[in-house]
Image (cartoon, rainbow, N blue to C red; front, side, top):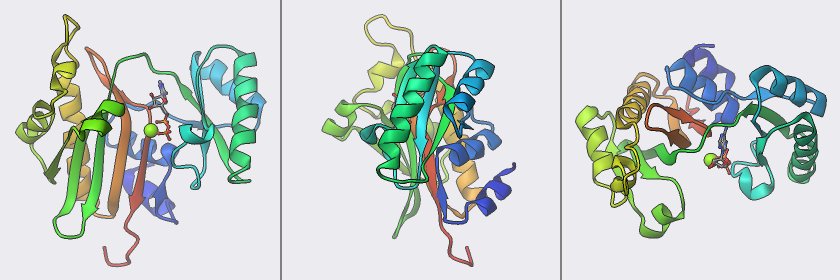
Length: 229
Ligand code: ADP
Ligand code: MG
């Protein structure tokens, strides 16, 4: 599906993880695609197709913070592990939403987790946020913001202005993260926000960045459903 089709299909204005990732993928951004599994057997069949290790997640508009509600099962390495995880997610999510679904995706390798978010400010309009994942970011409020659209120098400044920038730039002999891959994602998101004004919110949380490349492992969005936008 192209971006307009994805937007048109989101009747309630919410882009849950699978739809948000489809949108990002249509923009040329690398994600771990989600595949829906109705039964544990489907989840195992998908895992065999995409290859282990996999991640299972709940999908529901009532479960926006999936891991707080038993809705994320990471690093599953066998049919047995997938079957058990499917049961746990079903049990946890059906208590909150009887029609919650389950999706399967590839487990991405460890890297540095960062967040790119877009929100609509009542006065200023569309704003992009950048930060590192994890509790330190929240504790020190170590995030940066820019009005959209942004250009490459803005994207680089948004990263370089963080106190935690050293984590990205190569810390204690570690290899530097692929800053150019993050710039590419930020500019693609910025351009999409201009081109598709219906996107009111978009959160890539987290993006895992490596010495080479970056991949979005969780995303969600919200559309402005006012008729004349
Ligand atoms: P939540 O709805 O709680 O934000 P996420 O989908 O972000 O749920 O999953 C929680 C955490 O699990 C992420 O922050 C990330 O650390 C890890 N994670 C999620 N999906 C993957 C994946 N496909 N590969 C590797 N790690 C993942
Ligand atoms: Mg998340």
